[in-house]
Image 1: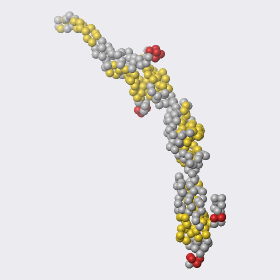
Image 2: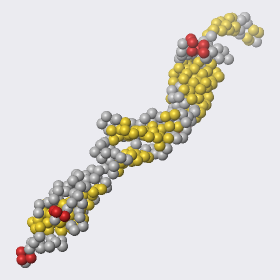
Image 3: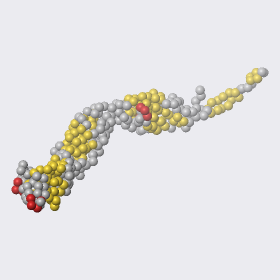
Image 4: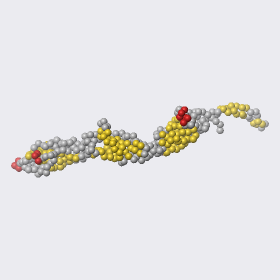
Length: 341
């Protein structure tokens, strides 16, 4: 085959039955051809963070200078595909000297422990050459950034859970978790765990907390996750206001109602105490008082003495426990026997 973009002298003579005529010499120029494939592709580093590929220029450039090289990176199932355009002699003279005059490129960071096919083509004004091909399996890299932990609330504590991050081609061996006040992100605690959940106890119910984490494998630590949304531990309900005795009464019963107290989790139950004021001490309902439990905000207290005075207190229950007892109600009196008749 002839070289592209080259002049050749051609001698031409005609032949017939009488013989061969005189030769006539002409000059002709071939068209520019596509270059041959780059030669001797090789890997200088298979580190996922710094895959270095180099090669030699084509043996035949097709009669026109190589304008650039096209480097294609193909991962498994089309993952991580990218294409780079590399100019000839891409760096300084010092770089080319260090590479012994060969072409080369450092690829962007790739996924760790993954097989890639690298193809290099040369381009001149006539088009692209065939590809020179080399395969590489990258080494492991640090894990990817985890997603923020999921936070569930418990009485006086928070429970954190999270998903396994991209492991970078090497198993995650531990996580580091740190907890901060949500407002100014002051770090309050920092701990390392092997599993993917942790309980944080001894937290103040009135405070809001955020958490973040990072993962470690044999190559080192990932970057920190984003902070989780602010959450606060659950608390017992607030102190209810004093219950209100209602007008409906009999000689043996009284009716009382109250408003639900503040609670950051659903209220489960109420307990109503009925008795004499002097028998209620130290915030606890004594044994001689009458206690009634209900899920409603109204209760009928039965089994009382006719014509007697009583007061009421109420407390509420949620997942974190019982609220303090309310202040006492106004005095209420059962009907006497004659009135009831």
